[in-house]
Length: 114
Image 1 (tube, rainbow, N blue to C red):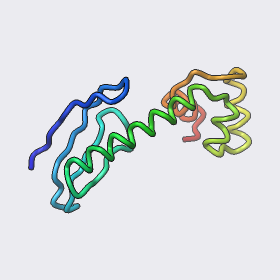
Image 2 (cartoon, helix red, strand yellow):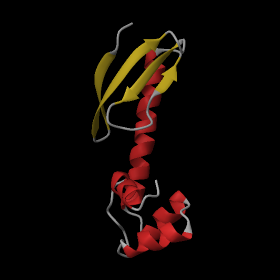
Image 3 (tube, rainbow, N blue to C red):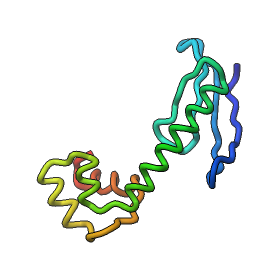
Image 4 (cartoon, helix red, strand yellow):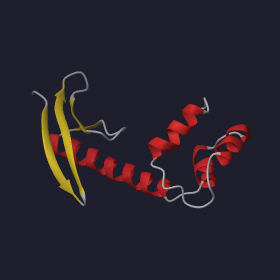
């Protein structure tokens, strides 16, 4: 089976899910484009696609939570060491950060702590 892409409307998000058969895995694989961590397998193509969409929904929920979180919430979430904690706090205002996860991770990369 060759790779297929289908666009799915789910909640407020339009998502493109790619799916294909993997002989190596002996399963269907699917992933939501642009959402990390959504490469999922299933015994049917529909099962793999639905599971990938569920993981994408969970990923967005985490991103929403982080955007509303303070630096202290992020520090706890990532279990950062005291030095990184001090540096993050020095670069962040109190209260909600309104930063997507990607920006938090860029900040850690800038600090050399990924």
